[in-house]
Length: 111
Length: 114
Image (cartoon, rainbow over all chains, first blue to last red; front, side):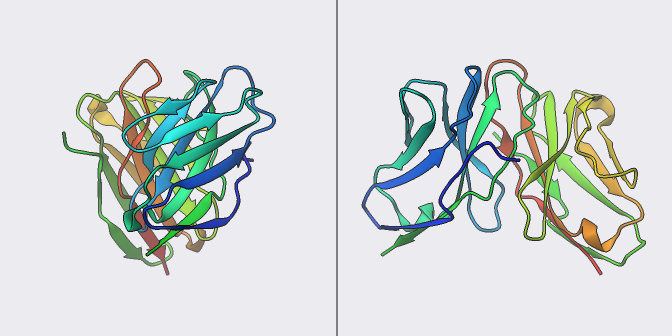
């Protein structure tokens, strides 16, 4: 079973920041938080990952709470093309990458 | 760089027939993974190759599924004989060895068994 909990769906207005929460209260010290998304009819796409510090790349920012029990993915200026299912996954560093997927959050960006 | 490519994109076969899915990973990526999503369920891990060797095949559902990666380049996943419950989307992913590099996924093969 997935070690993360996400809301099943969210809406966001185009141009606004989309904030997607994830609960991973049983995360271990050596487990990273990864975010992927799946746009309809495409394969999953990597977004960002982190261990305990906040991370930012060209796609998004990842904010991890100090106790590491939850995190938030931030898409700073959402566009219609960001409509997708977003998956939050915890993974042990250097493990075999047997990712355990949950149901994710269906994010709908509205014009 | 070319991404992970999968062929065919769609396949419709009858129960009892054989189907072979192919995955071409990103050039130079030693690690190759197969995942699948069956109807209404979450994406599940099937197996992991490092070059031509099977590193972990704990997710393979049964012996009707056979994965190969001869020469450590492309991989095939054969289902023989196919059953109705094998319908779903089969994803292939690859990544280079070492570090914490993310998986790069292909767009999947949608398999329908009728």
